[in-house]
Structures are given as C-alpha cells and as structure tokens.
Image (cartoon, rainbow, N blue to C red; front, side, top):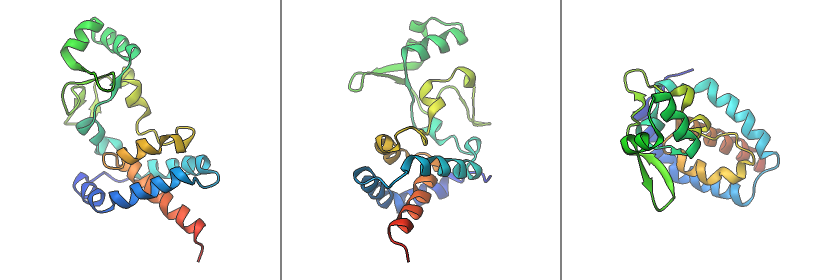
Length: 172
C-alpha cells in the first residue's frame, strides 16, 4: 500500500476528471453486465493500493451529513446535549435539509495523524465513505462523479473500471 500524494492526485484529477465523469455517465445509461460484482472486485484491489490515513482528503475538504442518530450518538460520546453539539460544530443546510460541519477540515480530524478523534462513533456518512460497494452501483454513479475529485480510492476504482469495461466492450 502506498501513501497518497495529494499534489499528484489533484493533478491527475484536473487532467482526467472530465473523461472519468463522462465514462460514469455512460455506465449510468448503459451499465455493463455484472457491474455490482465488478465493483466488489475493484473495491478489494483499490484498498490494497490506497492508504486512507496517508490522505484524509475527505475529512479535509468535505463535510459529512449528520443524521439525528449521529448527532445523538456523538453528542453523548462527547458528554454534550444534541443541541449543544449542533450549536458548537454544525450548521443546518436549508437547501438540502442536512446538518453539516461548520468548518473544514473536520473538527474531529487530527491533522498530525489524519486520524478521527471520534472514529468509533463517527457519522454514518463517514463510516460508509467513499461508498464504493453500495448496491446497486448504478444508483451511486452520481456520488462517484463527485467523489473522484476528492477521494483517491474512488478515482482509482473508476480508473480501473474504465480500463476493464472499455477492454470488455472493445476487445482487440
């Protein structure tokens, strides 16, 4: 497993993001057979190559959405009321109807270690991120289109998928 070089990752995203998003749009419209099985295989390969603790770009640049259960659980863990937790750390996004972090990077990220200080009780959104193997994969394409710009694991999965799907659809 290699450490993630965020500078190199951002350069690759700038250069390839449009093509990878176009590929995902094609997948969304015309999914290949056994796409979900392929996603599971790629997920395993990706995690042998990507070390989240060397990156934490998601925690540095994105905010999870907090459910009512998340707020209750995390507030209790911190010895706070849900109301106090929301007042201190969150804002309510009226457009999407979501509770989100007031600041970036995430207040619970230790920038020295890239570790989450509330990992055992982290929001469900964080626990599921980057959502690579959600069933049905085609229903999460819109999420992957966004996440390729933030998550090296998502980027790598889509890159690998493009190689395999293109090869299968256009054998030499």
